[in-house]
Amino acid sequence: MFDFSITALSFKDGTQQELPTGGVTVFVGPNNSGKSLTLREIESILEHGTVRRGTRIAVEDVITSRSGTLDDFIQWIESRGWRPTVDRQNSTVFYGMREHRLTKDAIAATWNSGRPLGQLRSILLSTLPPVNRLQLNGGATNYDRLIEAAEHPLQFLADNPILMQRLNELTEKAFGTKISINPYSQQYVLRLGSVSRVNTPPPPPIELLEEYENLPTLSAQGDGVNAFIGLLLYTIVRGEKLVLIDEPEAFLHPPQARLLGRILVDETDINSQLIIATHSQDFLQGILESTKRPVQIIRLNVDTNGSRSRVTMSPAEVKELWGDPLLRYSNLLDGLFHRGVVVCEGDSDCRFYSAVLDQVMEERRDSDLLFTHVGGKARIKKAIEQLRRFGVPVVALADIDLLNDARLLREIISSAGGDWDNFKISHQVLTSALSSGKTAPKYSDLAGVVKKISKANANDHLPLDLAKEIREALKGESGWSNLKKSGLQSLPGGEVFMAAKTMLDQLKELGIFVVPVGELERWVPEVSAADKHRWLVEILEEGYHARPSQELSQFVLEWAKYLGITPSGDSL
Image 1: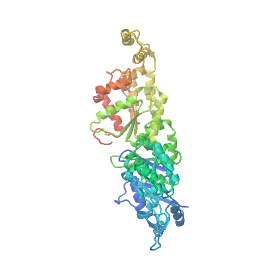
Image 2 (image 1 turned 90 degrees about the vertical axis):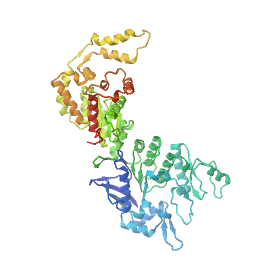
Image 3 (image 1 turned 135 degrees about the vertical axis):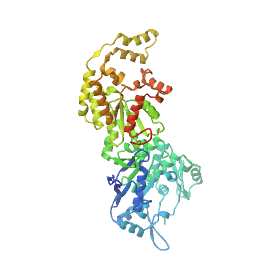
Image 4 (image 1 turned 180 degrees about the vertical axis):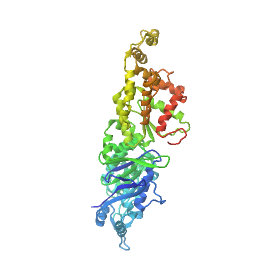
């Protein structure tokens, strides 16, 4: 029985990567990480045995596997619709038509010689770069079925009502409309919509022909619908054993990109092999939502020195990670396409630190970092674990009260690759000093809120921000609450201060940056922090983020440097 697939890739760094032969391999990574380059080199090595310019940059070799005899291969070719045709002048047997016309002897010679594919490329390999995505729907001529074989996807569609029906179901799901082909025309052209009459044996009634003619051509529609259907034509209608797709999301809106990802896994021949390069979280989510075929993800990266690296998630690892709701229902997956990720507690933290970063980076505002929040400190651990398993550089920013939860702190340190034993003594010193007791609120603590209450109308409802302020005033004070309110400066000098400072410095080495002034709002204490959303709005509207304090600038520059970003644009 015939079979053909890529079993592994040898990279220029001397390593080798196995690929799932009956599955999907997806290359991801930030811009200019080599995703498209890798696909082009795979294609060139398969077809020619080398790359066009003679210098291989990413891929050293492509290891393939094939099974079956020449007769098995010929039978497979014929089963795919490449029926043999005979030249009436010299009785030569051909497979395919026009530019893909191959003699049986040529097929045998290439098959027996092994690699590269050479002329067999048109039978075994399909490459779909974005540059000609919009031309995939170009028309095809009707053909003489007695002496010619179908070659173009539109020819197969015209002859296969079941296939046409399935394609219609998919396009209707994506765009709410069907597509049609006039089977009586000398030129097959895809048209948007459907006819009310049923196709009949020739000659067709003139009314049916007029209906087809009145349907708008697909080529006259938007780029999105053309790109989407074009990919379906060359993967589902006429997919080869090996399909290379670069930027399948090109020209598509996010919902269509996501649907396309699912379709390519669910609807393509399960015996084919897909190798895809994408820069779309939506498309990747669509791929992962399907369970029909194994999916392997390879994240590529290139540093400023030109050194290439990659991290691979096997199908089993991908399946395990995708089962986690945090990855599935957040934008963490988008981190695979960025140079680094900044994980924050909440949305306000993300927006504030992103705005300040733009200022301190000066001319370097294209840092290509993703800011994302995980709804509190509890999920920071999981976010770090998942992103680093994909090889994504990540930092976590947290308020200083993280130090008050020993269990959570230990878990986060472990997720970042640290050892709790290195923190234990300092944490004990700090905890002992700050947990010695809680003082009752002083009258001076309540003076401010009492004054606000006295000025209010007795019949008015209590505003939420004032209610919060009253609760905070009634709590009294403890060492931990003072630490969150005022940061390191609230600590007594000597051993306690040095213990906290040492912990913060050690956490920085792991990519965990704790706010030294206590909490987010204390970076701009002159703005009321009773309501965090209002605080952020005022910060941005009044431009406080554009004139950060020296301490805030230093804090931001430190975690940016950890991710390899500096104001000068040099990577560290």
